[in-house]
Length: 193
Figure 1 (cartoon, helix red, strand yellow):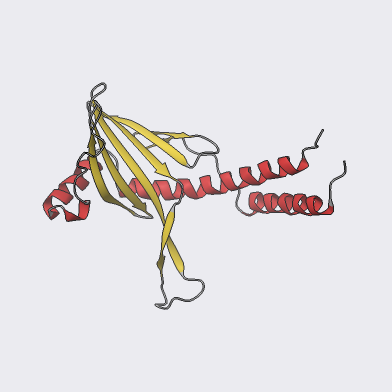
Figure 2 (cartoon, rainbow, N blue to C red):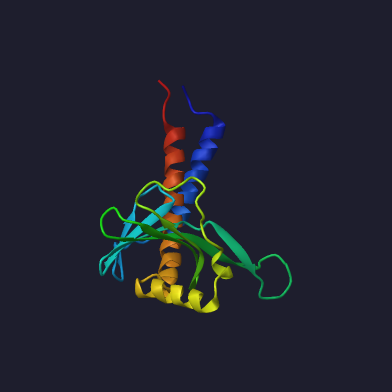
């Protein structure tokens, strides 16, 4: 069965877009380490995982691709072309010992900073379905908030990590976009038997 004119047009547009993306600013090879973290990036997934040891703790950071933004109007008006600040969600899990409790810290990674949103203690044993999750982070005492930021910073979850993640995810976003276009192109090219 021959391809329709619509399929031919879609294929041509996909080939052109893939070529444009690869020539304009080709994605770079993803790095496997950042600071003391190893980076686990699985092609086709929306997350990356970073792992490291810190004393007797296992630190695992799961980071989304860009999952939100806020406007950063430089001109002061809500006009076209205003810039946005991209957002990445982080889930930081800190485990002490085998099968123990996990301190889970929900964070936002902005282009140059980490912001703690909430923290939970997940017990190694089954927790009640409606267990108390604690207050919003911003409701905590200022000194306690500062101490928790220092706690994370000592474990490598800091502003430098936010900068790294934004650079990494910009590259991953391009890589995944090109991969996605290639997958769609392959599907349309496939002959039905």
